[in-house]
Length: 191
Length: 191
DNA sequence: ATAAAAGGAATGAACGTTCATTCCTAATCA
DNA sequence: TGATTAGGAATGAACGTTCATTCCTTTTAT
Image (cartoon, rainbow over all chains, first blue to last red; front, side, top):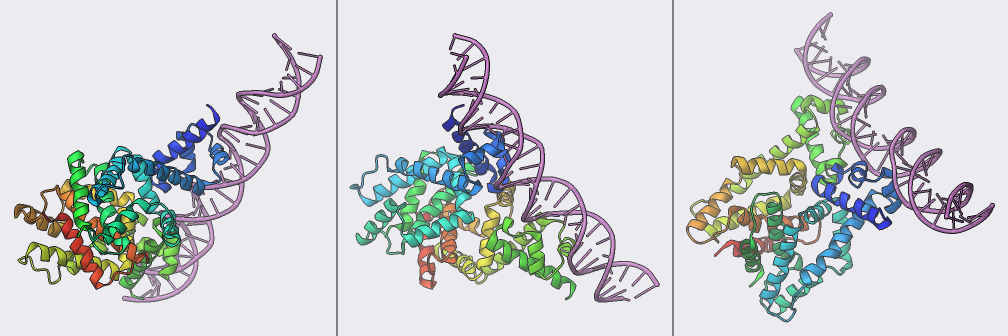
């Protein structure tokens, strides 16, 4: 097993176990076992569990942007742009349930809240695409003139909820239902 | 301190600590200390930590229904009924941030998922009021003909998200913003 | 005086992390 | 080329800590 191979195995095992069992249901010893690696080996690649958790998160976030930006046309009408981004995101979550569950675990943990607070205060990059879209829509009087946080809530709230419901098996989302759901989100934010 | 008084103190301390620090940030010893009670005393009232957590949850849920049903008029138009329930719920969460944070902790934990699954499979009582409302709306062709789970997601998704944002200090919700947000949710589900 | 309730030190299991040791590879020497 | 050895990656048993829970003593109430 080559060198980066081992790191990858650790990351993969951590993703699987944490996504399925939460941070506290995934002890380092168990992660090591599932990665076919000694317990101490993890510490050759990650300073401690917190660092492993954070790096894993950043890796997932980095994967996400290219996916939703693929074929994104910033010149199309606002509604079309919104539907593109929303459905792309929802599809990604459905096709990558482990990623989704991990992101949720992270966001609902102290790590995530702190991370989000930093982003808020620092006005960091990240959801730029959505923010631009909303600001565009407000100034064109196409989207309701609400604070951005509210628009985010109206868009991502349902999106994350249906993704969760699908992954937990409470509903079976097909292409049609995905589109309808994102269209309904648009109805919520449009004037 | 009388007998039920002690039980109440334990429940209050557990609510505060778990809402603020999560299940794993609220050890039994700390709960006992904050309740001014010996560590062993908790076990006179609750078989173990899981039972404490579950009973606390059921207590909160039981408080919730009377609140949102107050002044609820099942004969008013659908939109009005929806706005009443939605704003009442959102207001309750904002006025009782500890309750809200506890409920979120619970729902995002293995306890909550299992609990929800039981409810789903058993078609248990609970969100009856909302379900009736949605089914009414669908048959009157006022609400989109979506699966109930999707309608729940479109309504509660944003509601919980804005409540979270308010409590974490990312937005300051006043009466106007509360109404506008719930109206926007209605725009999302109405035909 | 007796029983019930409360208290908190003691217990053992589980966890993250460390570190002395092993193992593997590849450079060095004969 | 084949044998020897150095270096660092990998290991997993062991450690210290934390936690839920138990158990025995003390306090309170009757």
